[in-house]
Amino acid sequence: MSVRLETDHHKVLIFDEMTSPDIAAAVAVNAPVIVTLGAMEQHGAHLPLSTDTYQGLDTCRRASALLAKEGIPLIVGPAIPFGPPPFLSESPKALPGTINISNDTLRALLHDVCASLISSGFRRIYLLMSNVESEYAMHIVAKELTETTEANIVTLNWLIGIRPKYKGMLVSDKPQGHGGEGETARMLATAPHLVRMEEARPYHPNLPLEPVVPGDFLPYLGGAIGRYRFDRDEFRGMVDGITGDPQLATAETGEKSYAVIVEWIASAIRFDMRP
Image (tube, rainbow, N blue to C red; front, side, top):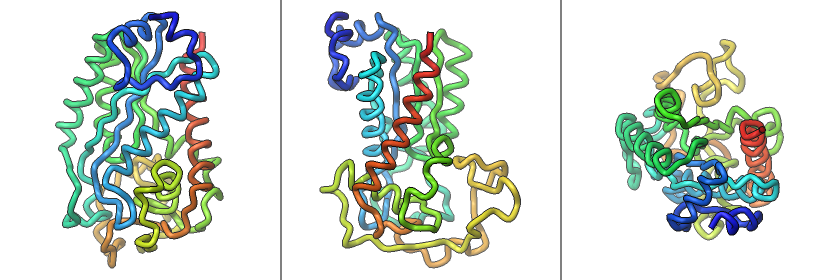
C-alpha cells in the first residue's frame, strides 16, 4: 500500500475516501492531515448554509493538490460541519437554518476527532479555520493535545496570513465580511450551482473604515482588543445576515482569492514539514 501512496503524487488524498490500509500507508510516510472547521449557518439569501464548509474543503483539496506535486502527501481530513453561534450583533438570530453547537461541544468534538487521528498514527495535524467562531475552541484543542501527546497540532488562520496580498483583490473598496464579495466569489468558483446571484444584496454596518484605536480589529482578524458584541447600533438595518457587496462577486475573483489562500497554507506547511 505504501508504494501506491508514494507514487501517485498528483492524487488528492481524501480521508473519507481512503481505506484503513491507505491510512496506515500514509502514517508510514509521516503524511500530515488537515482538518477544516466549517459551519451550518445562514449566509443571506444567495449562499447555502454550508458555505464555510464548502470553502474549507475546497481550500484543503487545492492545498493538497499543490503540495502533492512537491512530494508532500497532505491528507484532506474530515470536516467539522458545525460551529458555535456567531457574534450576536452581527447576525440576526431569527434567520432559519442555522445549526449551532456550543464552544464546549465543539471543543470536545474536535478533541476527539484529533485524538482519533493521533491514535491512527498521525503526528502532524493542521486545523484550518473556515468559520471564525470556531477559532477559540480550535486553539484550546491544539494547545492541549500538543502538550499531552506526541502529535504537533498547528492552527491556520488565513484571514490574517494573506492580508498583505489580499488587499485590492476585490472589486469593492469597502470592508467585506460574512457572505460578502470574497465569500460569494469563492463559492462561485467552488459550487456555482448553489449561488443565487439574483438574491445578492449589499449591506454595510455603521463602522469606521479604519480603527480609531490601534489594533481595534475583531479577534479573528488579529485584533488586540477582544470585542465580542457591538451594542451601539453599528449593525442597524441588517436583515439578511451578510456584510459587504456580494453582488460584485465573480468566479474569477474567487479563483484569484483561492490561489493566494492556498499558497499561504502551502507555504506554512512546507516550512513546518522541512527536514
